[in-house]
Amino acid sequence: MLTVLLGQSTDKHHRFIDELISGQLDADKMDYLLRDSHYCGVQYGMYDIEKLINSLTICPSKYDQWQLGITTDGVHVVEEFVFARYWMFLQVYFHKTRRIYDYYLSNAIAEKYSSGYPKDLNEYLKINDIKIIESLNSEAACNSKWAKAYFSRPHLKEAFVSKPHQEIDEEKDRVAWVIQRVEEEFKDKVELQIDQAKGKSAKSLIDISKYLEEAEDSTENEREESLPAIPVINKYTGRVFPIQSISVPIVAISDQKINVLRVYTTDDNVEKVRNFCHRKFYEEYFVYSQKIKEMRAALEKDEIQRAEREKKWL
Image (cartoon, rainbow, N blue to C red):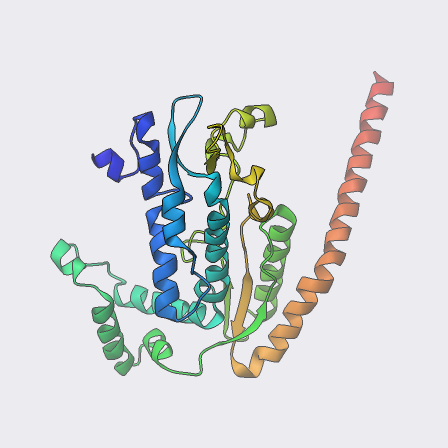
């Protein structure tokens, strides 16, 4: 039972239970999307939960593993569910104001518990939302920088936000390059906070793969023999296939992640930081990237010529 609760059961017929706890269609995602949407007063996370639950089924594989999947009738509600995660991320979980207060809150808590959290379990469990807010109030009264920032306005303002680009190698290089330039230009000169969507502080998002993770490094033929990440079973024939086979919207966001770059600063520096970031992100990076490509091409050409000369000497 413990292994099932941990999502680590070894029985191949229990795989669907593991996926109910942690998977593409798990109970946690179903819960937090609707709950967060309700309490934030937005509609982005809404989806037809009754239809989704009624569409869930067990999909057997040729390896006799029982996966959590859906019937063909449930494809559209899964699309709705997946895009609810997408919209909630961009509109709520990564909202510019929420993220800057995350920054203040995390630093205030780290400051308060710099010597470590209580080792006694009962004392540790007392650290709830109410206790944190009360302690921050008292810390703010004692001139804690982070606690005061959490309770006061104006906070640092968004000076730059990138498009929610997909996390591919070229885009990751551009983000890393811009961050480096920003830090070089403004370090120790202005108050600055650089934030990105990826990491532990961001909820899991757009991690929709066609096949399960163990197939990522396999060949195409091997992947075709692998288990689908979200299996669909044809209610008439019993054939099981990946949801991407019949869902164009899910194909568009499969195997991709969001990686938003956001830069905050004080009111008096917003325009300066914004202009700098825009210039680097949308103009100068491409000049830099082209120079790098030309240098690599020249090095490759030199290497080929060197190899040819060595052959002649032999």
